[in-house]
Amino acid sequence: MTETTPQIVAVVNETANPAPLGLCAFGMTTVLLNIHNAGFFEMNSMILAMGIFYGGLAQVIAGIIEAKKNNTFGLTAFTSYGFFWLSLVGLLVMPKLGWVAPTSAGAMAAYLAVWGVFTFLLFFGTLRLNRALQFVFASLTILFFLLVAGKVTGNPAIEHLAGYEGIICGASAIYTGIANVLNEVYGRVVLPIGPVKTA
Image (cartoon, rainbow, N blue to C red):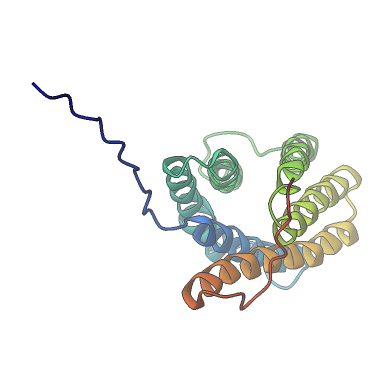
């Protein structure tokens, strides 16, 4: 009886990259909300629908796919910000339905501050990724704390400033997502994202 040498079979993950979906979902929803924050239109069903279905559910789906790809950072970021959008819609809609009392300015400031700290901590993970993601997370951290300042002071000028900064943040996420798509499709750098070389 002859012994056979065990064969090692490499399992190749052929799952598509979910990051562009998550980045575009986050970015487009962020831009639209912050056009409102900048004072161009009222809070409306368009923003809430984007918050539920694209900024919310699409990011959660992207995060679940990142888990399949063994990307802990992507899983944590996309699922967290997906549920951020869903919880934000809940904070706005539930009082209108008479389920709970409206959120006070102080409570909303605490909510935004917690997300700001979370984003700041995730920013350190982007230092091993690329420049584009570093900009997204740095500008998002600034956005959260500008919104906190607006809630604490009640100064609409700060909220409007946050709106303009949020448009830049959202646009940078859209850029990063589309860059990932185009660079993959064309097999070369069409839109640079500035990879970071690690030791």
